[in-house]
Image 1: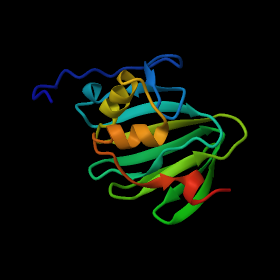
Image 2: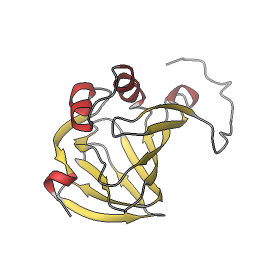
Image 3: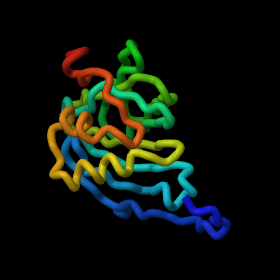
Image 4: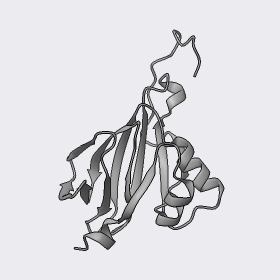
Length: 160
């Protein structure tokens, strides 16, 4: 992290803008804001996921996470509680909270994810550069970057 960031610029990312990388759940992640642009304050990315897709139960020790559902519906597990989050819903996940989610709609769900402080960028880049992989495999092989798998995906533990 640079010590002298007084000259950090404000910026706008157009609708189709952002850096794209492979999503271990399928599709892609589009980074709208990278840690290097925010003095490592936060990372923002958009993800589009197909029906039933979702990560294994995991937690972040150092990162807080916000998931805003742009389109579609997800089921989200926060510790032992499972709830539905439809388009327009916002989920706050404080650090240390075991969580996961799965797409519950018949079509693709689009999510805007905010991570604070910045993080998870390296996880997605490592996964993509190693050729991706199935979600559970990718998450356990490339955890790191403050991502610890602690259980199975929601579709396994709480099928609809």
